[in-house]
Length: 276
Ligand SMILES: NC(=O)c1ccc[n+]([C@@H]2O[C@H](COP(=O)([O-])OP(=O)(O)OC[C@H]3O[C@@H](n4cnc5c(N)ncnc54)[C@H](OP(=O)(O)O)[C@@H]3O)[C@@H](O)[C@H]2O)c1
Image (cartoon, rainbow, N blue to C red; front, side):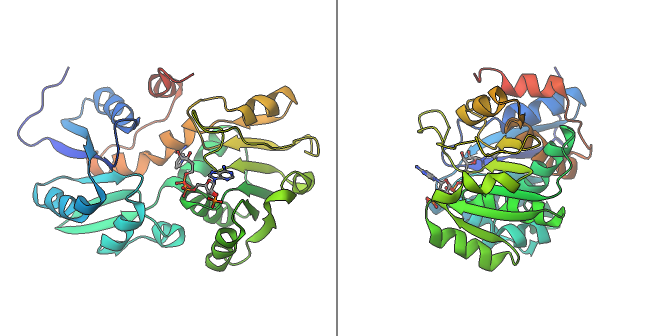
């Protein structure tokens, strides 16, 4: 085990709550692997304290931080510099502190696409996204940037319509149309919270799916959601959500600790530890 020196680099994840976060385990594995003089901490911060804490971290010499629920929009508002990835997503999940300034980016969309590519999936053709929340927005923008044509189905249609206003070219469909819309799709993405532990499963009829449909779920607890289990039983290719978490972490780690880390099976197994 490497002991920290007085010039150790510091970063962390700010959330409320944050105890469930797998990010300390993920970054801690990389810090150990690359023998870096640095630490990555869980930082539980209530919404009312968010901006004061971020400004204090800047003053305390932190390199930056990840931001998770419920702070991603507040982080967007706080940044001195917002990168295009965050502007497209309307939210920030990665903060880098440079010369006293706060720079924000959003790595969720790029992490999602990198995870697809790592599984041999080339994002082309038609994608159907279920959900229109923060993660959906980042993923829809990244899939459009990769060249896909994207449709969104959301329980609350107004939220899908708002997303379509932000991302020109995005199509919206009624929630009830989700099964029929599958016929022309190359990619199905569940970005809703349905299927998470303690949430109801996603009800999704896959009978109209083309045989080349790739089914992905960004929920990663459990690792194999009911949607993925059903897709696999039908012989469809599946991509689970934990890989997105691993890939979205790469740019932050590189900026804070100066090493571009590798996502591999060993990392996956360590971060997945304890998930069913
Ligand atoms: N793998 C990763 O790295 C990663 C990264 C980010 C997020 N996530 C996961 O992605 C999920 C969504 O995160 P988020 O930040 O986008 O959340 P969010 O902004 O709160 O959006 C939640 C979405 O789920 C839908 N939803 C919730 N309950 C529903 C129900 N009973 N029936 C139909 N739709 C329902 C909502 O629809 P309405 O608009 O109708 O309410 C909305 O579209 C979470 O499970 C989160 O843990 C994973």
